[in-house]
Structure formats: structure tokens, C-alpha cells
Image 1 (cartoon, rainbow, N blue to C red):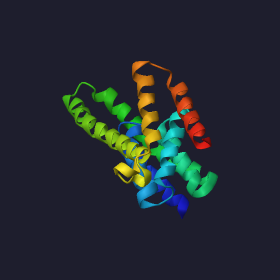
Image 2 (cartoon, rainbow, N blue to C red):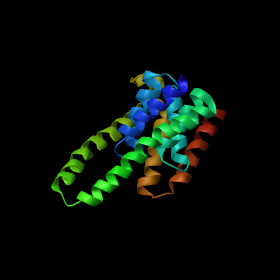
Image 3 (tube, helix red, strand yellow):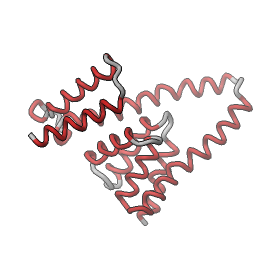
Image 4 (cartoon, helix red, strand yellow):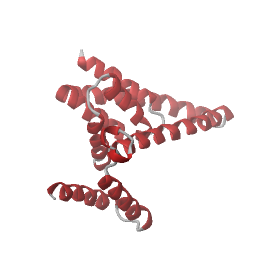
Amino acid sequence: MILWRLFIAFFKVGILSFGGGYASMPIIIEQAITHNHWITMSTFTDLFTISQMTPGPIAINGSTFVGEAAAGMPGAIVATIGCVLPSAVIVSVLAYLYVRYKDLTVMDNALAFLRPAVVSMIAISGITILLDAFFKNSTISFYAIKYHAVMVFIICLVLLRKLKWNPVIVMLLAGLSEVIINFI
């Protein structure tokens, strides 16, 4: 039963994730945390971090991770297939339609209307992860602020945007800073 639920949940993720991996995050949160309780928000944040460090699309890495957490290796396989299957079918059909009807203004209009929805889904994902990273138990108050996380965020932002450091090095340094803080 759980394998079927995993397949259906990640089939929904695959079919509704317009805009790529970041746009799939709210759907994964809804399916894996809110609706089915397979993982916690803290685990999801770890998943997001691992997905950034490993090769491959975030949604597929996420489906594999959640599937493994919920039902072991069979769950990982079923969740990954559920996530990939709709995309493979939809992309094949859309590629055919785009090549055949690419000169129609209807196609341009449809794509133009999808862009704002994709941007809003990405923004919601970022805000959700930011709140979990900056506040204990996702409680927004002055007393719940994780000051170390805020400082690491600011330093990483400066290193990435202003100094143009390699993102892999910045992620390794951020992880190392957390290890050092925990030992102190």
C-alpha cells in the first residue's frame, strides 16, 4: 500500500512541477510532510541541501530520498519512477506539439502565463526553507532566531554574490562551520 501511495504522491509531483526542481518543492512538502508525514521539515531541509550537492534534478533526488525514507529501496525506486514518468510523457508530447505548432501565438501566450506561476512556486519554496533554517521549530519570534544560521547565510551570500566564490567551496565551508560550532 505504501508503494502505491509513494507512486501516486510523486506522480503528482512530476505532473505538477512546472518550472523545474525549485518549483517542485512546495508540492513535495505538501505530499511528503503535510499529507503523508513520511519526513519532517527538518529532514526536508537536509534533503534540499543534499539535492544541491548531488548530481541530478532536485525533484528526482528528492523523490528518491523520500521514497527511501518511507519504504527503503523499493520505495526509492517507485517514488523516482512516479516522479519521472509524467515528465517523460509530457515532454515527449510537448516537444512534438512545439515543433509542429511553434509559430502559433497561442503557444507563446500559454508559456507567458506559466512564468509568473513558476516564479511564485520558487519563491514559496525559498521562503519556507529560509524560515526553517532561521527559526527554531519554525516559530517566528526574536527568541527563536538561529543566529549562527543567519550569520552563515549572510557570509555565504557575500562570498557567492560579491566575491564570486565557487558554490561547492562555500557549501563545504558552511558545513564545516556548523561542525566547528557544534564542537565548541
